[in-house]
Image 1 (spheres, rainbow, N blue to C red):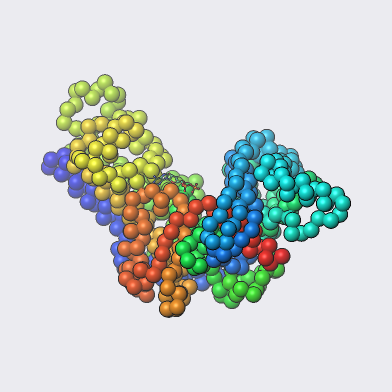
Image 2 (cartoon, rainbow, N blue to C red):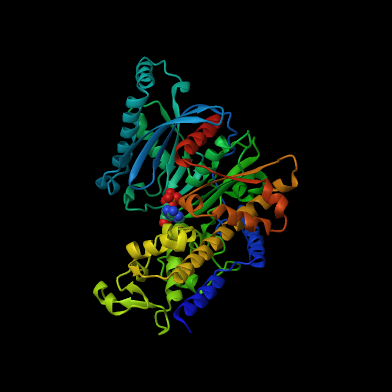
Length: 502
Ligand code: ADP
């Protein structure tokens, strides 16, 4: 066979290996709905279904000035958000790097005092009048609660949340290591330091980024609709949605569950869907999935996420490409070279340099998947050029570049169809499709994958139409919109909801 024929045949096979056909999709949706229900009535299930104590979502008419802070890793962000009450807002921000020595401080106070100091500096710079007046009135004993900013605290480390503004640190990650903090309430630690500085700030809510996305979308979505689901498709994937309180049966049995507002009859649930179907009852599992998982640092865990999110799709694509190139097959159209100098002697083959990132674990970024899947240039010039300049793969023929494109499309399409499983499960379980009075079912999404992978939403929609109970009619009612800034405006909105309960 001609070398190109070999590659084309291989490409067809690899594309088929990423198939996630209608029947499999339907089975997975059923399983997702089952795990949703299971997670609502007991702990330790594959979908964690964590109650967030956030008991309502905004509709865009909310007003006021709120604060939000975000400790996510390297940076600490502070912002204030003015909600205008018409789905729009203005935001003022600052950002500071967390000093390395504080990440490994001896006591929690050292870190949290630093955070409080940044909040003080922010107030002095951007809300000086408010800050000075409050200090003065406080000193003469006439300060009131209305003068205190409610603050939403986005804290992206594992916490055991037991109230809207109460969460115990389970363990530090991302380079932080302060043993003293483990087991303590991080909101109380921040509040204590704010109080030492006599700042007019109350830590009103502990915020998960997915819940922030939901709130941000719910406030900004067109009309006065409330959003059902906030979903992230970035480095990782996760979703939070509005659940009926009486369906969260495990909450009533929790010994350490704090108080919450029962009047809305609703609570936002953080699904932690990255670990959906870890036991692979319904998820596809091709040879590349198996290999990626085997070489990961947490085999058997986050199995849904490993098939969907930005952290993993580049690697999945890389493993599929290695198989495509089938470098052990003497008929393969690629020639692996030791060095660039050697190229001169081989003229008929594409060439892969031995030190191409394609040979290294995690060597391909997911943004490359987007480039390949979206290349509409003449003769696939973009793919061929990128392979040459960034991946040391030279002289790729147009037919071979097509194979790269088709496989990128297959990997991304499957990820989008899997994403649709979660969306479909949540939409169906909400019962909103049976309620004809609710015209649109609104969903907020965030993350580079859904924002930049070409056609991600279109693939999701195609899959939604294949789900019994949704179909063409249901799919049309589902509105998907980008929700930016969950840890800014989203966290501020959670502070607002929480302040209303206090
Ligand atoms: P995070 O989820 O960390 O807040 P992002 O939403 O930007 O941040 O997601 C980052 C992830 O998205 C990384 O895994 C990266 O590989 C991937 N990514 C970045 N750019 C693109 C792109 N153009 N297309 C697809 N994935 C991308």
